[in-house]
Image (cartoon, rainbow, N blue to C red):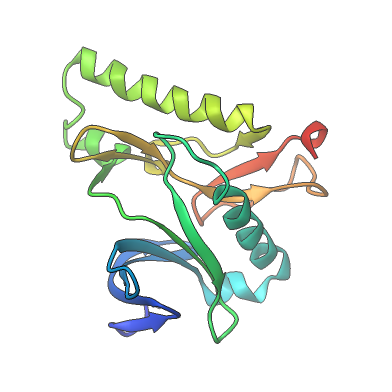
Length: 181
């Protein structure tokens, strides 16, 4: 269930529920610098599983160190006073690629190729960091109002996670290659 709004997590004032699955995403305001951000909070169900909670925080730590024009920026992460992990991300105006496709907002063939190229650049950068994204889908790609494509972050699968295990629901899945650990 979404929180009663407005609510605060640290210096972030949650203003609007945006959606979510295993994590809930809110439009929020950083009360120190006044920036609009997106705050992703792991659900109670996710918090009940120690592995899920650990992976969420590990993903935030990893994602916070990735910088690329076509990858959503992570500004902060931590746990609130109730022990729920949260991640603070760049707030993007626009729509996910699934809705852009459904609503015929992807434009002509040339624009569709520009979108595909930006997704490929994001994935190329992630792979150059020895990370494999295991949940590439239109829902995890955001097309901004200016036409910039930003790939979202996802739950990290790192060292000690077998190839057959997976956790989907808080976004896509990032996985460290074993030879990179």
